[in-house]
Image (cartoon, rainbow, N blue to C red; front, side, top):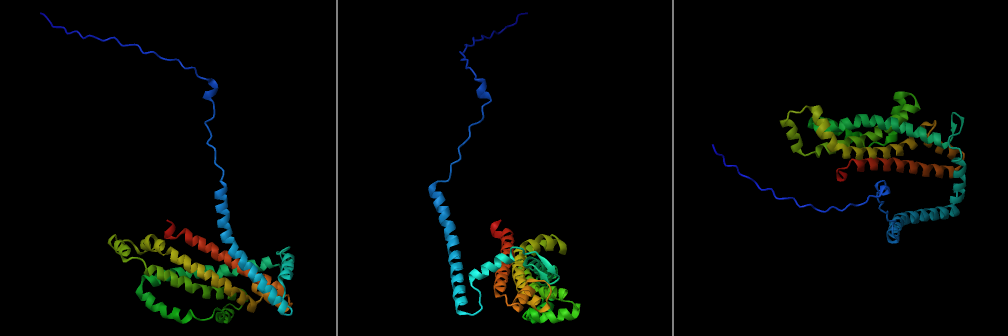
Amino acid sequence: MSANVKTKTVEPIEATSAEIVSINPAAMHAAPPVTAVKAPSAASLQVMMHRALQKALPALLGAIVLIAIWQIAAIGSKGFPTPLKTWEAAKVIFADPFYVAGPNDMGIGWNVLASLKRVAMGFGLAALIGIPAGFLIGRFSFIASMLNPIISLLRPVSPLAWLPIGLLLFQRAEPASAWTIFICSIWPMILNTAEGVTRIPQDYLNVARVLKLSEFTVMRKILFPAVLPYILTGVRLSIGIAWLVIVAAEMLTGGVGIGFWIWNEWNNLNVENIIIAILLIGAVGMVLEQGLMAIARRFSYDNR
């Protein structure tokens, strides 16, 4: 039996020359090259300083104008303190703002904290009631028809008109002040929350109805995220009104608080201390409002 055996010719592999490269051991452990950080150029620093100056210059000019008007008013009025005299009194007051010399003789720091405590009590209660009430008014037309006339009737009433009602109900000045804060700060929360609910697109609610979502799920997943910017706007307006009203309420009720402190300084004819308290009230109110505005910008849809 014969078999044809095919042979395959294997071509020889040509040898390639290899070059041996020496490796430096120190180069193996060398640190990677560090990219140099360019220092801000003179032009960029000049632009930054120009922008900062553009923001600071108008405020500085406004402060100078205010101080100049203040100085002119002090020169033309007998007993009105000058800015320099007020500054000297402020250094004495803020040297020890938390002293305690008696139940009704405390530093200005304790008085501001007492006022903030009353505002927090009344404002917090208004938020707990006003925001859910706004959701109900915006969500259900029957509740809106029932409560809108009551809101329209009570909202224009001066906050201080509610103070005697609070004194009659609670028989004490402390809850009466918080009651006044509550009744004056609840309306912006109700109205802004209800307005936000009514502005939700109907398509969202139609989808929720098709999916047969519960009312709680609709409230939590659809209504609350969409209405949150409106809620924060109402909260910002309410905190400004609450801080505005607490001073007048404390003047009438007495006790510890920035309003009572102003009235006490007026009885002692310390007008420069009254001006210091006015500036401090404005500063605290500005901090509260700016903080809430920052929170509102954080949750705004424009920043998402």
